[in-house]
Length: 205
Image (cartoon, rainbow, N blue to C red; front, side, top):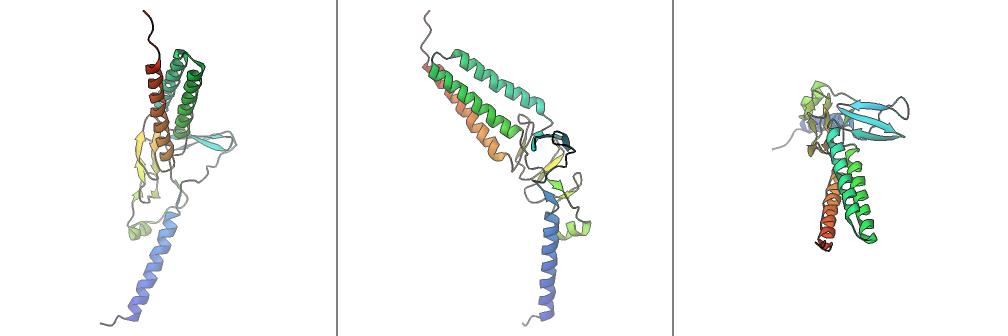
């Protein structure tokens, strides 16, 4: 059965219009978009996430910051206890190393951007309906695949994995690798502390 050339042209034109609308909508968010700070040492809010501009680098502090403080205190307390319990210089150097490693990997994840989407352009209702994608009514942005709105942080996070109170905020596409790095360093540090404790000679009665 022959196909009308007019129908093919209309379909091609409709496909180009849909593609252009999709590109425009998906350019309405930007994970890496910079925040307009009034000066180099100021702060801004993204939902319930407080962003400090620390010399041009954004430090993202989530709503559960107090849990992060508790976790940081636990890491430092365990490290300090281990450093005071070792009996040799080699064990002391190892204990200091794993404590610093756990602390740095924790802060790197806890203060990083989880992948917060920031709107630049708000698509129309017709665009949203034609593309059949989700739209966040709270953040007023079109959500790409894998994006989810966090009720705790009150932002849309790209590649949302879960909300971790010990990190203070969400774990998303931008800090997921840092999160697993911290888990590896943390459990590795605990394993080292356990091995050092088992290797200690028994205290004479």
